[in-house]
Length: 185
Image (tube, rainbow, N blue to C red):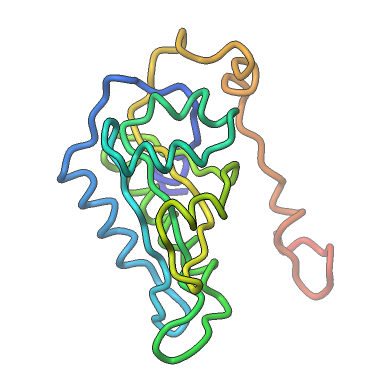
């Protein structure tokens, strides 16, 4: 497995003083831009806020309280949006396209020496209103980007979860051949 994939994880303990440079941000957004998408529909859009600016604050304001508790230490907050319609009509796989673009963005963050944490715990309708999104723009994910912080900065209520080994289903439970449940490997 490629080291970028192996090293990617979603920590909640970030360095509150870290900065994401313009070059790092541009590299992450370019990686997202070059992601594959159904019919080259390119449905991914992002609002990008840096700590201290109004875009960051608006994204922060729609996060769940639990996510606000740790995401306040991120250098960047992004709101990932799936465009459900383009000039050719409806885009039935727009969320899939946003997911591909966002994973490219996250892997580029790892390549830049950063960490990124994707969140579904936010008020999508609140984001729609705050950012005056058109009806075809669907807020799907918030991404916190920064640098890994000191272990002492892990909130007490998250410590066990953050320090536990990552777990994944075995290949035998996700990849089949011939019939459902028959492992390919």
